[in-house]
Length: 89
Image 1: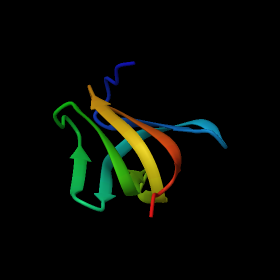
Image 2: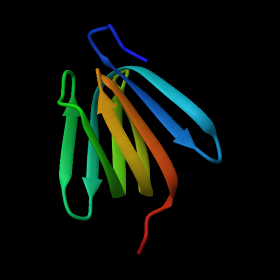
Image 3: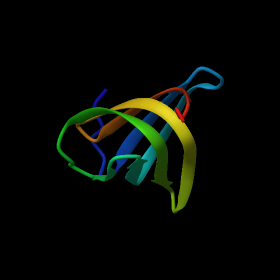
């Protein structure tokens, strides 16, 4: 899926709630135990795993996913977050 607007699209896949899509996102902040990452418009394609938090700036408010274990991929201003469960301790 390609996004042609001036903002990003975020797809969050979760077992409990299924697919949630956020359009017109400004940024995604990933806070892992080992690194911090701020993904913005036209950011380089990336793929990774995290044990931590994800914050999504969406329509002027932040959506928080706290203490999660997840995989993510960013390409063509579409960010996919696949939540596997709670953060490993």
